[in-house]
Image (tube, rainbow, N blue to C red; front, side, top):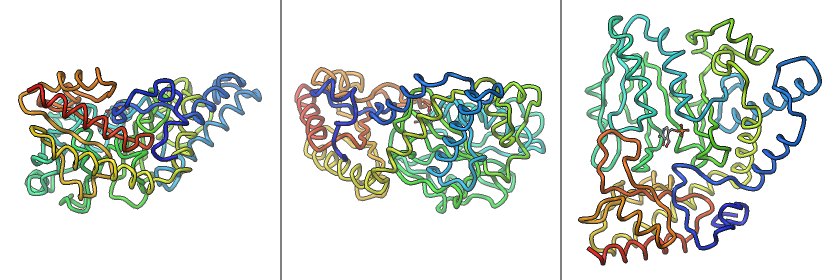
Length: 392
Ligand SMILES: Cc1ncc(COP(=O)(O)O)c(C=O)c1O
């Protein structure tokens, strides 16, 4: 299955296309499409709204999905997981509904100025709203290779630090954060953005320092617009639940987290299909996926080093983070959009642009591999890059 596009109809429909933009969104595999279709063809009740068998059955399927996603993330309990609209929705939820109580007595929110805007913006907005209560946003940096600068982190951290926002795998550099290497103050709560790690690397949230986390479903083979938020039980008392709104959500109570995050009608179809995406990935095995991605990243780095003018942005491929399969590079004297367009004309789809980062360089291109990519895909990228380099 690894390196095969067989189970991905969007890819088999275009055999000459090389899709290298998984970090934006992964195509859906057959088992997820089958689950989505079955959900849409089956009883169409709103989960938990009403006591009739269709509504009860829809609710049971959502709760089964919750348990499956919780197990996939390594959570201790299903009620620590709620379904959201992507990671952006999940992060905004945490800042809006968990943040105010957690920061009621003031404190610093540590965030990385070089991280995805969806990760950073909700916390900056919160700090602004709560500045009169002594809340500040304090930035820490990444180094040239995209790794968190541990010294700068230590400078930013203090006994005022209340929340530490960290990205697990960076969306441009592909670097993975080792929380153990950061001087995180003991009282601080860690919020981990797992948008790029879920589906690429095993997650064990229960045993980690992170008590809050967000996940993007459409970057791990789930349907577009799906995602999850994780809040450990010990943090549930800080979630602002709107009792009246909670009553208009699922008719049964799971946890303060689900009461607050799943107000209104739930995308039960998306939740069940996201659970089938976790089964799909687990069926292949995340250790094998990581090994496969590391192999592709190493092949790319090796080939790119032989093309004059190509500079890789991330850390060396021997580093652990190569397992993320995300590689960023630039081509001397060429705008990223031009390089991406040249590759696109050769049937290789990559990502250029601002990469959802503040002040991103405009010459940087990202190739993100996933389990359906193979060595030929890497070689097509390298050939395209070599051709583009010749034109400079
Ligand atoms: C690190 C990171 N965080 C958050 C997001 C936003 O995710 P979503 O598309 O699920 O809202 C992305 C998307 O690219 C990302 O890479």
